[in-house]
Amino acid sequence: MYQAQEQFAALNKANLEAATRFANVALLSAERLLDVQLKAAKTALADGIDSAKTLAEVKDLQQLAEVKDTVAQPAFEKAADYVKSVYEIASETQAEFGKLIEQQVAGFNKQFVVALDKLAESAPAGSEVGISALKTAIVTGNSAYENLSKAAKQFNDTAKSNLEAAAKRAAPVVAKKAKK
Image (cartoon, helix red, strand yellow):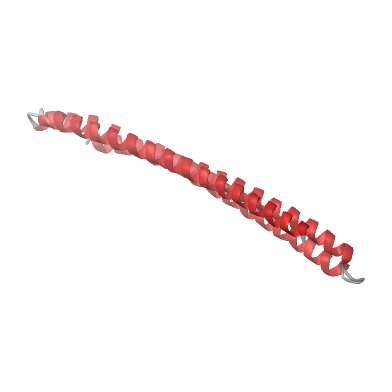
């Protein structure tokens, strides 16, 4: 009975530590995201004021055509940088959560295998097949989880490269349209 209480206390402690790590990752990510948003809002306000001042000084259509290029292109570039920053924060947060989940799954699997080994020691004859089947199921589940994790990482990497490529392709198009 005493051993069960110790195991329960250890499990609770491990779960509390895991929850704390998850909370810390979430809070740090929220803080980073808030910082990016605040900087973007300050920059947008300053740029908006500068653009309004510049546009207020325009005296004819020729000057307006020249000014629109200087206003549109930097705004697009800053918007693309903002999206990229937000995506990077989300991607890094997802990766950190993935690492924590992998640690939790690995720890659970290890504990489960240890429990199965103890069960096998006191199990009646003939139950080895059932215990072996459970261990095989764990290995199969781990393999499936690893494959899903790899697929998620590949998807994340592909999405990131697509985002960067789209931003690079769009910048010249916006610059060209702004000059018209």
